[in-house]
Amino acid sequence: MSHTLTDQQHDEARQGEAFAPFAEDPNQYDRHFFIESYGCQMNFADSEIVASILQEQGFGATRQLEKADLILLNTCSIREKAEQTVRKRLTEFKKLKKVRKGLLVGVLGCMAERLKSKFLEEEKLVDLVVGPDAYRTLPQLIEEAAGGQKAVNVLLSREETYADIAPVRLDSNGVSAFVSIMRGCNNMCAFCVVPFTRGRERSRDHRSILAECQDLFDNGYREVTLLGQNVDSYHFSPEADQAPVNFAQLLEQVARISPLLRVRFSTSHPKDITDEVLTTMAKYTNICRYIHLPVQSGSTRILQLMNRTYTREWYKAKVDRIREILPDCGISSDIIAGFCTETEEDHRDTLDIMRYSGYDYGYMFFYSERPGTLAHRRYVDDIPLDIKKQRLQEIVAVQYELSLTSNQQDVGKEFEVLIEGDSKRDEQDWMGRTSQNKVVVFPKSKAGLKAGDYVRIKIDQCTKATLMGRLVE
Ligand code: 5AD
Ligand code: SF4
Image (spheres, rainbow, N blue to C red):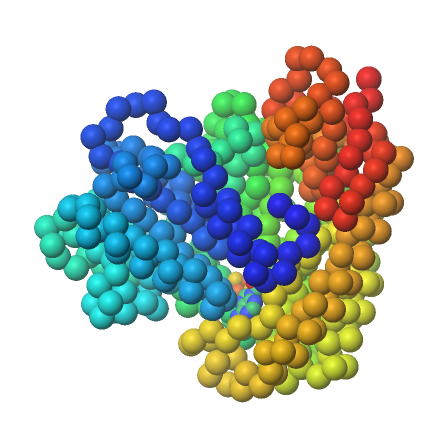
C-alpha cells in the first residue's frame, strides 16, 4: 500500500485488501462462508474471530462467491464513503440471492447498529445483522435467518474481548499478524463514531494475548501488531491479588517471546503515550521503531473543538520526546481537513505541524459528519466540500514531500528488513519492511531466502512510497 493516501485512495486500498486471495481450507466442509472486510485493521482482526466461530459450526472459508452459502460484509462507519461502498455491494448480493435459493447475506461490524432497521426491515437487503460484540451469537442467528426470521444482535458489551477464541488467519502472508488487545474506545473525539459503534473500552487478558503471540511465533510468524483504538490506555486487572498490567508492561512481555519476533502496535493517542512506553521500546530492538500518532489537526482551537484534549504545543513536545528517546523512530499520522469552523489559519497550522513532525506516512481525510457524534449534535458542518477538498489536496502535497524527503534520507543507509513475500511489481524481487515500517524492494540475488527471514539491505534509491536496495552479504 502506498504511504500517503487520500480519503478515497485509502478506502479503495482497503477494499483491495478485502479481495485478496487466501488459501482455501484443505478440510472438507459442507457449507462455506465468504467474508469481505472494510475499514480499520481492527475489523480485519474481527473477521478472523468470526471465521473461527464459523469454522466451529462447520463452515469453511471460501474466496469464490459462487461457492458461498453465507456472505458476510464486515462494515465500517467511520466516513460516509465507506457506508456507500457497502450499500452498493449489498445491492449486488441481493441480485445473487434471487438466483441462489438459501443464500444468506449478513452485515457485521460498525454499520450494524445504525443501519439494522434500514437494511433488514425497510430495504430487505440482508438476512442477518450482527454488531461487533455479538459474534458469539452468530450460530443461533444463522439458524434463525435460515428459518426465515429476522436475525439481529447489535448489543454492545462491557466485557466481551473474545479472549478465548483463536482467530483463523485470513489473507495471511504467514509472516505478520494482527492481535487485538482491547476493544471499544472511551475517548469522545467529536468527529468519531467509534465510541458509539464499538462501545466502551475494555482490555483483553494479557495471558491470552501472550499465548496467541507465542502460538503465532511457533507457527513461523515473525511480526505481530497489537491492535486497539487507543493502545496506551490498555489496562488489565487479573485476579484481585495480582498486579494490573499496563501497555508498556504488555509490550515488554510480548517482546520477550523472542528477539526474532517483531512487535508493532496501533493506535497511540498523543495524550496517553507515556515515557514508559518509549523507554520500553528503546530497551528492545524487536519493538519496531514506528509510532502511529494521529494529530488530526495542528490548530489548538480545532483540537479543542475535536475534544482531543491536547494542544498543538503538547503534541509537538510529544514528537520531541519520541525523537529524544528513539532517534530513529518513524512517525505517521491521521489528519482531517475541514473540520467545523476551520479557518485558513487553522489549516496552515495543520500544514505547519506536519512539517514540524516530519511524518513518514500520513492517512488524510476530509471531514465527514457522522450521525450521533458530538460534532453532529453540537456543531455545524460549515466548511464547503470544495474547500475541504482543496485543503486536503494541500495536506496530501505536503505529505508527499515529507515522505519523499524521509525516504531520501535513508538512501545509502543499511537496514534490517523482514521479508514478507514477492514484490507485487516483479516476482524477481523480494518485498519486506524496515523496523520503521517502510517498504523495501530488493532483487532475489541469493538462493535459499524465504518470507519470514531477516536480511540486511543497503538502500540505493527511493520513491516517496518505496525504498529500493540490495542485499549486504
Ligand atoms: N471524518 C473524517 N475522518 C474521520 N476519521 C474519524 N472520523 C472521521 C470523520 N468523521 C479519521 C480520523 C481517525 C481515522 C481512523 O479516521 O483521522 O484517526
Ligand atoms: Fe475515535 Fe478518538 Fe477513539 Fe480514535 S481515539 S476511535 S478517533 S474516539
